[in-house]
Image 1 (spheres, rainbow, N blue to C red):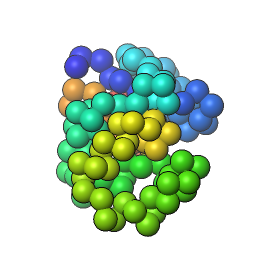
Image 2 (cartoon, rainbow, N blue to C red):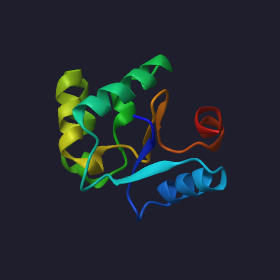
Image 3 (cartoon, helix red, strand yellow):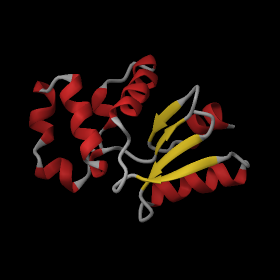
Image 4 (cartoon, helix red, strand yellow):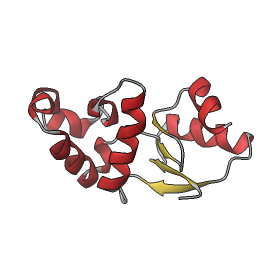
Length: 122
C-alpha cells in the first residue's frame, strides 16, 4: 500500500476538512466512498492495530453518533461483541465506520484532528 487511502463521505464536513488539509500539504491520497465501499475486514484490523498502539479499542472505529449505530442499538450490543464480530459488522456497513478513515502504509487514524494528522501525514 503506497498511497494513503481516505475513506470518506462526500456530505461530511469533517471529511472535507481532512481532504483540504491533505491538499494544502500536497499529500497524495486515494479517495474511497465509505458507504459504497467500506474498508475491508483486513483494513479494519490494520487500523485497529494503529488505534491499539494509542491505547484505543474497537469502539474507536465506530461512528457512535450515526443513525445506523443508534438504530442497531450498538451502544448496548457492542460491549458483548467479540472484536471479530465488530470488525465484520463494520466491513458490511460503511455508515458505521468513523470517518474520515485514513489508512497508509505506516500510519492510520479515524476522525480528523489537525494536530494528529500533522504528525502522521505532514
